[in-house]
Image 1 (cartoon, rainbow, N blue to C red):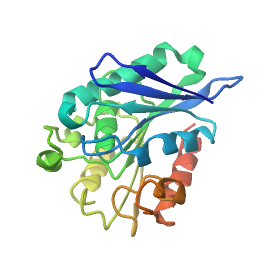
Image 2 (image 1 turned 180 degrees about the horizontal axis):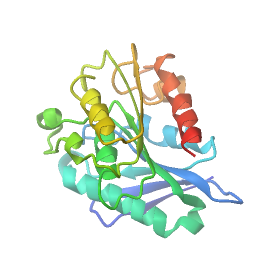
Image 3 (image 1 turned 90 degrees about the horizontal axis):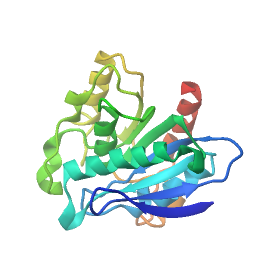
Image 4 (image 1 turned 90 degrees about the vertical axis):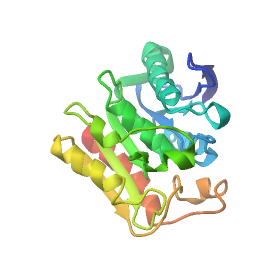
Length: 236
């Protein structure tokens, strides 16, 4: 695997590329980590990318502006530029742009969902882990965002969503449920897995991400990943 980092035009933004040499183009996943716009969470980044690479995906991680440079619109620009870079270099990156999607966690899920609903999105599928959907956390995160449910349209890509009922940061009834309902209203294919345990911010919820996440794991919630892989196979 060849790992590299390229700068994006958006200030304080870059793209980590986890390129697996392949005789044929592979599907790709653009990972957008969480961190409340105050950091790029390690648990959502390289370990998720390497895990995806082990399942024959080209993996990418968007590093968008955080801390004193945090800005929602700038972060959205970084995501769009990351996709533009990948599509422009698809041959050298051995990525199949017809099977290129986005996977976002928490605040990164907000950015992933927002990008997927743009008129010129290049994402063919969307994965959202305990995403921030409503602007109810703006004061906590120090940014001004938007209600992502209002962006959904008939061209929104097929979406896979998971979370847990005991998540107090992005409660199911406030964030995931309204988004799923709106997707269904627009006849967007959606698969939802809301676990009874797990809570917010578990990434893969296994030991691999747990060792950089205060040993937080949950065997039940960890099922989201094989379910996600199965969903992708059924999409294709």
